[in-house]
Structures are given as structure tokens and as C-alpha cells.
Length: 193
Length: 193
DNA sequence: CGATTCTTTGAAAACAGTCAATCTGTGTGG
DNA sequence: CCACACAGATTGACTGTTTTCAAAGAATCG
Image 1 (cartoon, rainbow over the protein chains, first blue to last red):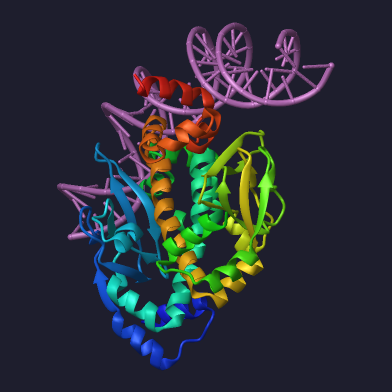
Image 2 (spheres, rainbow over the protein chains, first blue to last red; image 1 turned 180 degrees about the horizontal axis):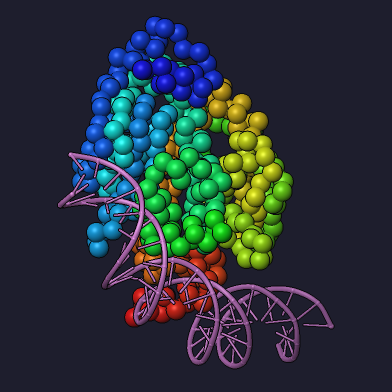
């Protein structure tokens, strides 16, 4: 059950962790089961945990003054969730994180994560790789959000995350693309001829 | 002249570099003067240098199929520029980088940067801090691009980068916000009452 | 089932883009 | 030093895209 995490660390640190090291890592995490709709983080709270999704999915979103939700991030198996700003700055979060399906999630506190990073080079390496990839992915997401039309963004989503289209309701995908569910429905109809 | 870089490293690594270490760092960089409009990177090329702006400013932008430019990134003194995707993956870049004013820029190759990162812990620390901050800033930029109207994005720009408004032509700022120069002009007029 | 959430569709309105014309300031070459 | 070219800014009229509001149908879940 912690195996997914072990594989992830090996992959992103380009190393093979020893059993001893992994034992240490494993002990820093707590597995928690979440029911669909349950919150990992609520707006105004400081994000306490960095979370690794073993099974299920989650979203990070804000709610604007009109009550409309804006999804910043959709995460599935082997993805991390957590408000990076709140985690690092220890400031109250502007976001909510909740679970879209019944999920199994490994939680680690910021302090334990820091401790692991300081004692185990593999963890530092993993974090750096993750950040690197995150920077690159963000660059593309910013570019697409600012330069592409709603239809073009939908097509990019089909190309880059076809799994999302089957897994998440359109209302979530629309929010993730920054459009309304109605526009999403119309564009979908048009693009699928 | 390399002083800005030294201060930057001290700040972002939360350390004070020794003269010896800095000598090593300094030697890895080359100072180059760029005339307004000169390119650091052209679409299709692999980005060879990570660049620290000592004086002046630069933009990273793509050109779409209709020939319209989309500015992803505006950099001024004490900012780094370079296509992170191309730099790390060694793939041809989808972006151009050019200089908006006569500029003085310190260039370092990816290989030299890697070498410094491996030999000097301060550089590793600096890179990690930069990536961390980049991830947080990107999170906000993505959120704003997807959730805010053109007018709201303009107001955010006024709040967060008032210096940009004085320094860059509106045509650049419009592109940076993902709107046309005409819309920028109208919004500006409206917001400034 | 019955209730809720999600999806689709239509019509009108708001928003931003396009095209075109004019105006401004800047800088360069003659 | 002037004249002209050029890049940028503004404005108007129009077009097109996306949102909003409303209603109804489909799917899902307890």
C-alpha cells in the first residue's frame, strides 16, 4: 500500500531506496481514508499536510465572491496535493482541497517532510525533480490559459489528459479549464463532431 | 557588476558565500551586453543559457499561427530568464526570448550550472528556493488567468507589479495579461476613472 | 424510487477581439 | 536639425465568443 510511494520516490530521485531508508519514510506518513466530498484543507486554514494520493482523486479550488468554484488542480493516483503557498509560507490558504472519489491518501506534515529532506538525500532529490517538473508544467498551463481559446484548451486537455475526460464530471473539467459547464458542453459537442 | 548576482545568491540560499566560492561562480558566467531587440533565444533552438539580468529587461514569448505574440514572462533586474523546459529537457524551444531595453546579462550554460549545483551547496539551495517560489507564483498566475476577467487581471497587475506599468509599453503588458492592446487601453482608461 | 447533481439546449446579454482610422511620441538617416 | 518612418496608443463601429439565466432531460446515489 506504501508501494506506490516507494516507486514514486525511486522514480523521481533516480535512485533505489534502501529498506532502512524507506522504513523511516514510511513512518513519517499516515494513511487516511477519505469519503467522497471530504476535505483535506479548507479556505482560511494553514495547510498542514502534503498529501500523496494512493487511490482516488482530489481537487484544489478557490471560491470567488459570487460563490463560483475555480479548480486550480486535479490530482489522481501518484500525484501530490497540497497548497504549496500555504505549506511553505505557513499562511492561511485561499484554497479548498477535497476528494472527488472515496480515496486513500498518505499524509505527511511539513515538519516531517523537512526532516526527511534534511536527513535523506533521496527525498531532497525527489522534491527538486518534482519542483522542476512543476515549473515546466506550469509554464505550459499559463501559456495555454492566456493564449488559447476555450475550444483550443479543451482540445489540449483531450490530448494531454484523456483519462480526465472519462474520470471527472464535465462540471469539474469546465472549472479546471476556466470556462462554464454550458460552454464546456457546447464545445465538447462541436469538437466531437 | 557581479555584485547583484552575489547578493541574489546570498539571499536565496540564506547563506553568505565565501570569496573563493564566488570566484568559482563568477568564472562560470559570461557578461554579455544586448541591444534592444536582440535575441537570447529563438524558437526552434535549444536554450543553451540560463541568464541573470544585471541591468535591463527581457521577455519570453511565443508566436501563434496567426503571427500574434504571447508574452509568458517579463523579467527585469535580478530576475532569471530562460526556457526552463528547453533547458532541462534539451528540447527545441517553442519560445523566443529578447531584450526590451539595452541590457547587461550574465549567461551560464546548463552544464556549468549543473557543475556548480553539484559542487557548491549554496547553488543547489538557491535553485531550490527559486523553484519553490516559482511554483507558488505560477499557482497564482494560473489561478488569475483562469478565474479573473481582463479588468481584474489588470488591477492585479497594478497591485503586484506597479513598476511594470511605468516601464513597459502597453502593447507588452496587454500580451502579458493575455488581452489585446485595444482592450488594455480601454480597461486602463476605465480603471483610472 | 425520490432527491440531488450533472448535462444539454435556447435566447439574450456581456465581454473581449477585430478592423480601421487617427493621433502621439521617438528616433534615425539624410 | 529636420523630416519622415515607425512603433505605440486611442477611439469607434462591428463581429464573435463566452457568460448568464432559464428550463428541461439524464444520470447517479442514498
